[in-house]
Length: 172
Image: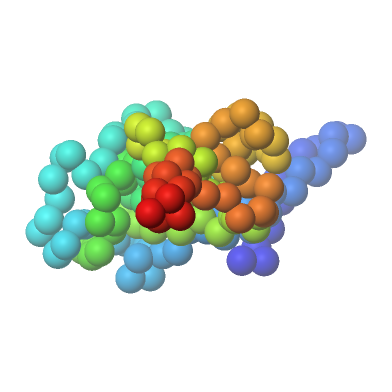
């Protein structure tokens, strides 16, 4: 964190600054550099753990793809081949292996916003999925709006299941 990248643009053009702080939710696995991501151990690398994206030109672009994927738990990137793996293994990235030219990062988003809670128990809506999705959206954007399945207002939200349980308890 705290790094900045400057691009030189000659002849009266303006200088662009990109801060690494935009990717502060990414943590290097075992140092990050020259590491490939793995599941439960160094040889656990099932293809079902990740989605490969070809033609990704930078580590930052690979991280951006992860942030937009609700199930993303981390990334593996190889710059020389423009290869980006978006890891979606439910248990996360638990290990890595030393391989030159690769980089491995866990994605651990911090919302920095109000706590988001599921307002329904239908489908795959959970507090965790709401927090992950709503951490990357503008405040009030669906599904994190008053008419969506996630409440990010900061008030204490209860799910339909919790409401039904408390009503049943009160009725008995």
